[in-house]
Amino acid sequence: MVDYAVTKAGMMAFHEGLRSEIRAAHKCPEILLTIVHPLWALTGMTAPHQKRLEKAGVQLMDPQIIADAVVNQ
Image (cartoon, rainbow, N blue to C red; front, side, top):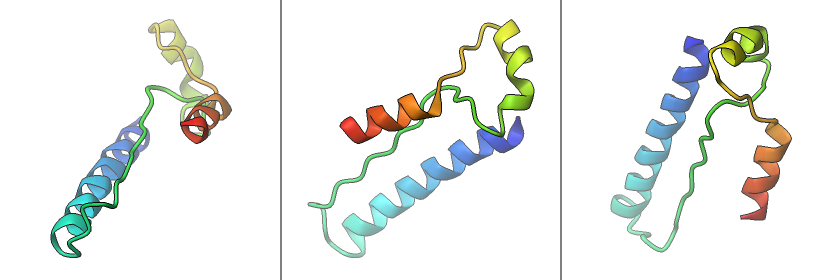
């Protein structure tokens, strides 16, 4: 599950760095960024671990529902 966790951590670091660069280096504070990182989504990375995760009480979300919610916002 390290690949799943490190992907989220990497995206958060990228988002923070990009936001800082846009504001400081490019002096464009009017450009706003958003990052979305829901809990567990049923993807190719999590599918092999689905039963174990659900046994531990984790509810895997449908990626399409997540994508639709992001687009609707």
